[in-house]
Length: 177
Image (cartoon, rainbow, N blue to C red; front, side, top):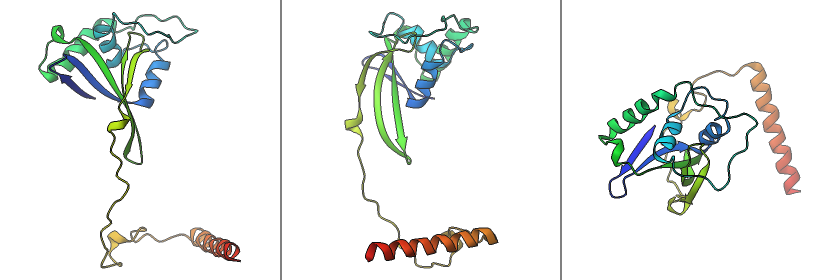
């Protein structure tokens, strides 16, 4: 878990993958134990209410470890050397990545039911690096430059490799002619 605190606004930021947030939001009525996001939202955003609420067929009840939420908050704030009395609100920063590159970022404020009260896209701050320089390989026979790393293929894999190469050759001939 990554946590940041903005001293000027007294806002606590936590960072989470978009998919994990959606999973927590969907399962809030079924979960027995609280997640740190539940504790942060109920402690610092309890006075907020989302304009649209998630409907659920299950009635939401308290978590069985509801009494441990203050401990969870205290552990998070102790790591930042802050007291809970100075925290004004909690903001959740949600992000997605693709091929180890950041693809989207947004800041959301959630209510105690993890519904989004307000959100702001931060995608304009993502810098896209489209070109990358690949080092020149001098020695092609080094084990590090060999994708199979010295592993031998089975007879079945070799046969499949040959048929794949044949299909590629046929496709190229068809595209040319």
